[in-house]
Image (cartoon, rainbow over the protein chains, first blue to last red):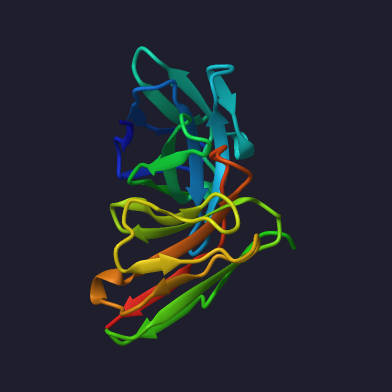
Length: 115
Length: 112
């Protein structure tokens, strides 16, 4: 079985400071991991994905995430937050044993960016 | 603009009524999904379809049904709505099981 835990339900940062969103996963298989972002009243959009290639993954809008197997983590970071980064972020794990994958979503982390 | 179109964007419904949420995609993706989003619970899969003509149950299928008559359309039906089905519903599609989903903008449903 696989699951994903987002360790913070809310994160508040000042504009221009680093952002860290924490995600831990459990999986019986080699996982594929994703981060999605949801801006207010919008659908989710893929930020980045890890699929067993490079452990440091770069995504859109300056975000990146590092896969650490020993820590079963896939934390999302950005060096300098912008006001437009205010949104909800979801860590997602997929099991690839099926012909198609079933996604397990974390509960989400709400990011607030203050001026 | 290519993508997922959902309708209606918002609806208030009396308990016991039947409701169909519509979803259309123009990307020719073979897989489509319906999720519900509730505060603190993230997204939960209701039903999915790997390809036209096939459907499957997700994590929370009770009270919902779907059909996939063609590639583009994937309607979700609530046969007899109950207040616990108050939620925001998202339709999504993907090319196979890659995990790269494209989402619609959601349908907010309130059941009174």
